Image (cartoon, rainbow, N blue to C red; front, side, top):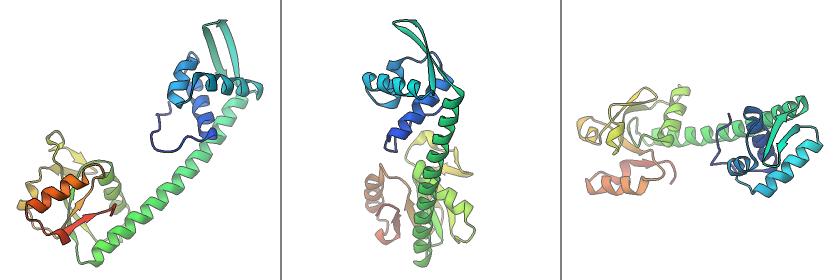
Length: 207
C-alpha cells in the first residue's frame, strides 16, 4: 500500500492517485479513513468518490447507510497506473536535481583540499550524501566514519558505514567534519565549536 507522504504538496491529481490506491488495497476502507489518509475533509472525499464513480473508476456496493464497499474498475486501475507513472516521473526529476546539488557541494569540499571526512549525524541527510558518494566514483572523497549523539544508533550501520560515538573525532585523523543533519545542525555546530574544533573545517550542506 502507498505510504502516507509528508513532503510533497498534495495536488488534486496526487490525491486522486492516493484515493484510488487506497481503495484498490482495501475495498472496506471508510470515507473517514480515506479522508484522514488523504488529508482532506470527509465531505471532500464524498465529492471525489462520486466523481470517480461517474467517470467509471470505481463502483460502490451499498451494504447499508453506514457500510459501503468500494472497488476499482479496470478503467480505475488504468487511471491509477497512469497517475502513478506521472508521480514517479516528477519524483525522479526532483531526485536527480537533488543529486546534482549534492555532487556540486561535495566537489566544492574537495576543491578546498578536504578529502578525509567524518559525517556527524546518521539520519536521512547522511544517507542521501553517502548514497551519492557511493554512486559517483568521480567524487574523490573518503568518509572515514559516521558519528551520532544518539547512543541507540551506535554499532549499527548506515549504508555500510559503522555508526560510532563523537569520540571518534579524537581517535582518527581527518580533514573536516560534515554536519549531516538538518534538524540538529545548530546544536552539533555549537558543540563542535565548544570543543575547540576549527570552524573552517566544519561543513554543512544547507548553508
